Length: 141
Length: 141
Image (cartoon, rainbow over all chains, first blue to last red):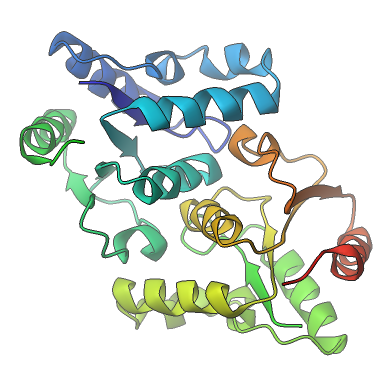
C-alpha cells in the first residue's frame, strides 16, 4: 500500500523515535511511504532546502496519490492538522495515533467522518499493532 | 464582520496574551467573534465540559457562517491547521498571524491559495495593524 505518514516537523520533534519505529515497521511490511524521510532526525535540515511552495505541492500530491494517511498526533502541528483535513476531504482513510497520555484536539477527536480513526497507544508495539489492524480493516480506495 | 478567531487550545497557551489583545481590538472595532471565549484563560477548562463532537460541530458551523477566519499560528495546533484548511476549502478569506521569531509549517506558508494571507508581527500593535489592514482589503463573501 502507498501510505502517507504525517508527523510534526516545525511543531516539535519530541516523538521522533516513535515516528521512526512506525515507519520502519510499515516499510518492513512492504508498504511504500513517500514521507519516510520526514521521520528521520535530519528531516528539518533537509526540508529547509526546499521552498515552502515546493513542500506544499509535493506533500499534497503525495496525499492525492496515497491509499491511506497515518498521522502521529502526539505533538501538535499545523501541518499535520491541515493534512488530515485535506486527506478526509478527498475521501482517504485516515488513522491518527497518539501516546495515551497526550491530549488531542477536539477538532480531530470530535470529527465524526467515518473515514477517520483515532487511536491511543501505550507503547510502540501497541502503536504498530494499531497500524496493522487499521490497514487490514480500512476501506481503501 | 463575523470573524472566526482561531488559536491553539490543546496545543499550548504560550501566546494567550496575544490572543486576548487581538480579540479585544477586534471587538472594540465592532466585529462579532463567536470564538472570543477561546482566547480567555479559562478556555481549556470550559471546553472540557463539552464533548469532542459538540466542539467540532459548533466550530465548523461557526466557520461556515463567518466572513473571514483569522488564526494566530505562533504555537502549533492540529485544530487550527485543520480549521485553516476547512475555511479555505469553502472559500473563506484567511489571515494567519505569527510572532516574527516563530517558524510556521510549510503546509501553511507554502499554500498558494489566493484567499490565504500569512503575516509576521513584531509586537501586538503590529499584529492589530495587520488584522485591520486584512479586513479592509480582503474580498469578503
